[in-house]
Length: 86
Image (cartoon, rainbow, N blue to C red; front, side, top):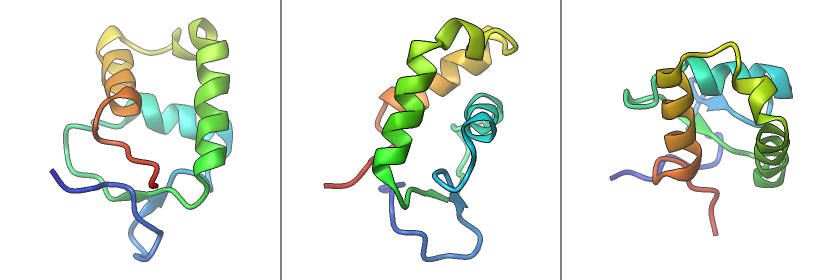
């Protein structure tokens, strides 16, 4: 499995840490992470802050989304697809 975390070297990458929190939540829940999407993480600490905020207010953040969308988002965050580096 390829490592999906890498510096933002490519113009086509989606930088998860340039998004505002609300944009990131929408991207997280509406993107099919089972398909290949190029993304990068320039600021791993910011991504951890976003995830912490998401889990703190999870009921509110996840309410507009379907069970399948929530399931995909959680697998993306907690599974092997996302690597924050060393």
